[in-house]
Image (cartoon, rainbow, N blue to C red; front, side, top):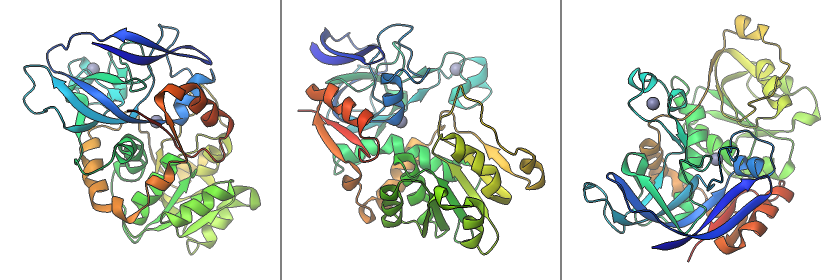
Length: 351
Ligand SMILES: [Zn+2]
Ligand SMILES: [Zn+2]
């Protein structure tokens, strides 16, 4: 069977080709893609600014924020059937290497694959996708594909808040640095818990959006001393939960000033390959508990359950600023690259 699939060959070199799909191996599913969002990390790979997309190893198919419908299951797969609506993990651990056997996060896997970033793990910027059932997750059939494509994205912000070694409730002051798609997900996850939720972003449109999606306060870090602004809206306590979603140098440095004593800090925004100057001494005296998020383990099923309860209270469709057909992938990428301020989420649509 033939399908049109996109391949990233290098910076600004994304080509759609018709290819013959391989036959399914045991445990695999053939999935017809329904929608695929363009992530900031896809844009960075396209622009040649990130080492995450491994075109040095060969052309690869991007797209890790996707949803689709199972059209065929390998004979040994009994738990998925044609018609099931599904999405999937991005960071895929092998499950059998030494680090996987020790129970470490998927990012520790010695044979780690990353869907949509490597030639050995094609993503969803194509009409069809083949994926092992162990990395595939069903979502309710009454959700549209655009909602389904938000699951992976949402799981990262949700992990930043909840996977962060614990809990959040109405006693917390939760600070979200960065009001992009991951930040808005973290904002929703924090605010439904009842926590005083504070979003920090220099872009006015992002601050306004954060307020519409549950933030109690939205602060402009360029307007003055952001740590003081946070203390002012937390009764002097500072953040008790903080998630860094911006990946921006100033945003990262501000974590150590904003976090209150014993704050649970999650790092989610990518900054790999850069050194950031920050006052790390505060980790000691503020007793910060800092965790990473590489390969948000076992969080997709929980994310789908969480979204099932809350998705109708928020206008997820309105978060998709642009819809373009897959055939106009070049144009969609250009919009995502050039209009970073108003292209909140560019969605690729499929017939
Ligand atoms: Zn992403
Ligand atoms: Zn492994």
